[in-house]
Length: 230
Image 1 (cartoon, rainbow, N blue to C red):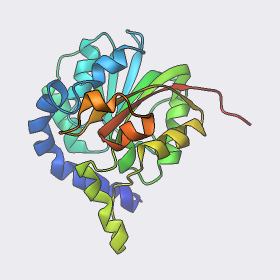
Image 2 (image 1 turned 180 degrees about the vertical axis):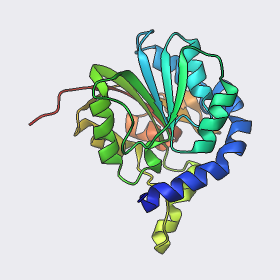
Image 3 (image 1 turned 90 degrees about the vertical axis):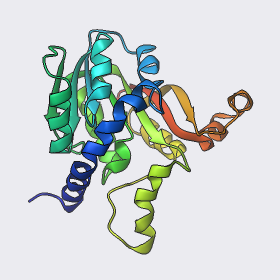
Image 4 (image 1 turned 45 degrees about the vertical axis):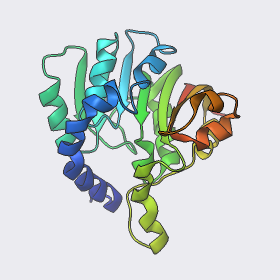
């Protein structure tokens, strides 16, 4: 029987898929996601097999493939995967599968790296997802996570929990994600801040990491897999 959280999330993202698809090219090329691929390339060697976990309509996966990676895009939403296959057909370096981050359809140590942009927050148990990603990646491989900033608008999707309502968004602060990752087999290599509109980036450069995170729409964390203790 399908978990209720997964059932609700799948239905919600099926409903959002076409609107997402209409905006994704602009987001990745000129909007809030334009820095992601360049940041990824700074650390992850080309030719590796990369999992784009929570790939949406697949445009980010496509950009990875255009930059020398072999990519498997995975998303919970069947409609997202349908759009991804329509948009990115006839690309030998790129494939798409439907799957759940809590039980991703990859073998142990199969992937050379992963990208998960604003997808961890949409899972019921982020810790178990981190452990699964640890399982499916090779030793010392890289993982790029995008985590929403404290006042990013999509956080509204988790607000209903304060009224006792059922929600499918499990938002966390960037520092909370960082600590959770470091406690569970990941080392932070670098971070990049996607600031909200109106932030003076020259001023922000002088701030501590925690204060920079507070001004972001999204913080990008580049992590490297470490051996688990115990």
